[in-house]
Amino acid sequence: MSLESRSDHELRQRFEMLQGVEHHKNELILELLSRADRLQEAYQKTALDHQRETQFNREGQLRERKLQDELRKLKSFMNRDPFTLVLIDGDGMIFDDHLLRKGEIGGKEAAAELWNGIKDHVHVRLPDIPSDCRIVTRIYANMKGLSEVCWKAGLVEKPSLVEDFYRGFTGSKILFDFIDVGPGKDRADEKITELFKLHLGNIQCQHIFFGCSHDNGYARLLEQYTEPMITDRITLLEGVPFEKELHTMKAKYSTLKLENLFRSHKINVYNQPLYPASQSLPQHPLHSVLDVALSPIHGGYQSPYQPTIGASTPSPAPSNPSTMNPKAPTWASAATSAIQIVSPPETPTPTRSSLVSSTEIPRNRMGQRIDPPTVYDKEEVDRVRKMKLCNVHFLRGDCGYDPCTHSHSKKLSKTEMAALKTVARMVPCRQGSACDDPKCMYGHRCPLSVPGRKDCSFGDNCKFERDLHGLDLNVVRTTKIGKK
Image (cartoon, rainbow, N blue to C red; front, side, top):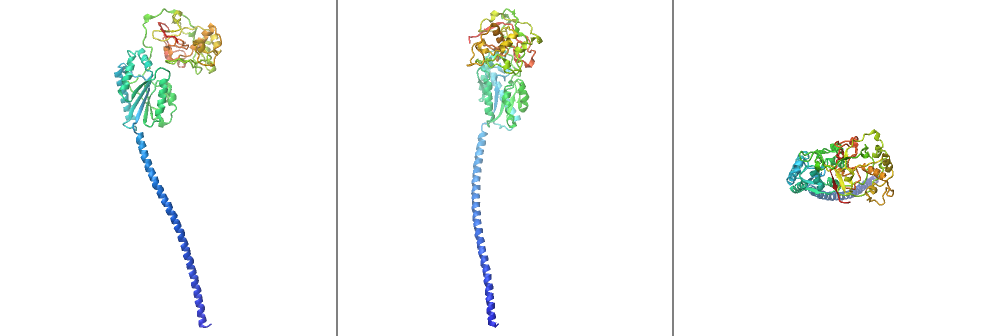
C-alpha cells in the first residue's frame, strides 16, 4: 500500500475515534444536564417545604404565645379571691355554753375564735393555700328550734340570747353568716349537702372545713368521695365525738377540734325540770299490757308517715311490718314470746280523766310526752297486723293517699282498734317525747324501758333513741294544742 493510501486510512480511523469520543462526551453532558434538572426540581420542592414549615412554626409559636397569655390570665383569674369554706350544721354543732350565755358579745367572740383557729390550721397544716385566702363560714340551723332547745336545757336564761348570739356572730365578719332554715326535718342537711357538692368542685374554694360530727347521715355524703385529691381538700370539724359511721371513716380525712369553741357533749333537753313537782296530778296505778317486753324491728318496716318538726304530711303506714322484711322480728311477734321476757315494774300512770281531750297532751315534769296506756291482746295484735289496714285512716282519719294501698273499708271493733294502736305505737315518733301533735299515733318512749334507766334489754339494737328510755311516767300537767 502506498504512503498516501496508508495516511488516508489512519486519518479516517483517527476521525472515527474522535467521533466516538465526542459521542460519549455529548452523552455525559446530556446526563449531567438531566441530573441538574432533577436536583433543581428537588431543591425547589425542599425549599417550598422549608418555607411551609417555617410558616407553620411561626404560626405555632404565635398560637403558643397566645395560649400562654390566656393560661396566665386564667391562672390569675383562678387564683383571684381564693377562700376556704367552713360549713357547719348548727342543729348539732352548737357553740359552747359560756359563749351562748353572752348573747351578741359571745357571738362576736365565737366568730373571732373560729376565724383564728381556721387561720392557724391553714398556716400550719395547709401551706399550699395562699396567704391571702379568705374564710367563708356558713352555719345552717332552725333558729327557733335551737333557741328553745338551748333554753329548755338550761344553757341560756332565755331563747332570745341564742338569736342575739348568732346576730353577733353574723355581724362580726363580712363572710360569716348564720342561715335560719326554719322548721322541718333535714332542711339544714339538704342545704349543707348541696353547698358542699357545689364548692367541692369550685377551683377558688381551696379547702372545706365540714362541721358534721354529730350526724351519721353525712357519712352517706362523704363516702361518695374516695380519691385522695378530693379527700385532701376536706377537714372534718369535731364538736361532739364523731358518730359511729363517721368515726370509722374519719381516718381518710384530716380532723380539727377547736377547744372550748363547740360543745363536746350533746344537749340533754330534759336535764332541767320544766314544771315544779308541786303541780303533780293524782297518781293512779294502771296496768298496761303495752309495757310487756317487745323486741325492736331490726332492718324491717319503718312507717313512712311520721310527723316532722313544724309540719305533718299524711301518708299511709302499713300495719304489717313483716311484709317489708319477713325475716325481721317484729314487736308483735316478740310480744307472743313474753314468757321469756320479764315485764317492767308497775309505774304510776295518769288517770283516764286527764287524757280525755284529743287536744291535750300529757307530760311529766320534764316536759316529756307520756303515751296513754294501751291494753291489748297478743293474739289479736298478731291477727290485726296481718289485715293490712291503713293506720293513718283508722287512727288519725286523714290519710292523704288516693288511692291508698291499705284497707280503709273494714269496720273495726274496740279490740281491733286497741291492737292497731299498739302496732302503730311500736314505731318511734321522729319528734320523740317533744312531739306536740295530739293525733300522733307513734311511740314517744321505749315500752321496754324502766323509769330512771337509759337502757333496755335490747341495748344498742333498740330502735328507740336513748332519750326515749327511762322516762318518768308521772303526769304533772297537760299541754293544750289547737285542733288539727
